[in-house]
Image (cartoon, rainbow, N blue to C red; front, side, top):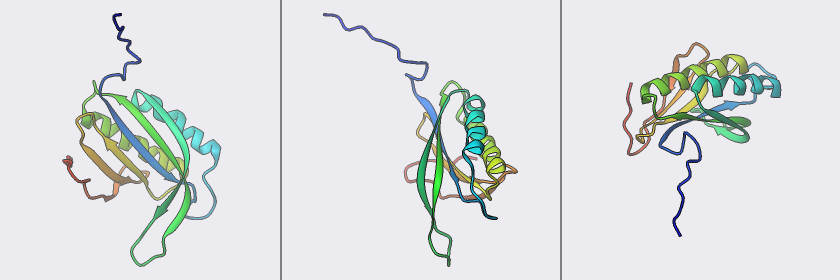
Amino acid sequence: MARRRRRLSRFAEPAHTAKLYIGRDKPNGGYVTDAELRRISDGTAGGIGGGATTADTRGTWNEPKKPILRERTATIELVGSAQDSCDKFRQRTRALAARAAGIAKQTAVLAVTTCATGEVDADLVNARGQTECPLTRLPGTKRRR
């Protein structure tokens, strides 16, 4: 019996992926609401040219000389076509992270981008789109700017 190959989607081929980590506690008090998260999420899929999945997670953050901060976190996972260049996908991801930081009124949003080539880039991006703190490149990957 011959097996039929079925193409599941346009992403059945290699794709770029990204994750945005958004703390739900606001620095000046208050909480990122579900409505604010919907605004962020609704803008991500269209901004990346693919799909987005939002999950309610728990995160920790450790700053030097401060106790570990534990908070509810929203994680948005994005998938984009590998037809776009890695740099273009990374720029779009950073722009979405900046938008998310602005809507959520966060100091910064962690954006982790994995290109179809395997390159991984991780940065804390503020609402102005600036990198608050470039994170060390992950083992076995190239960091490009």
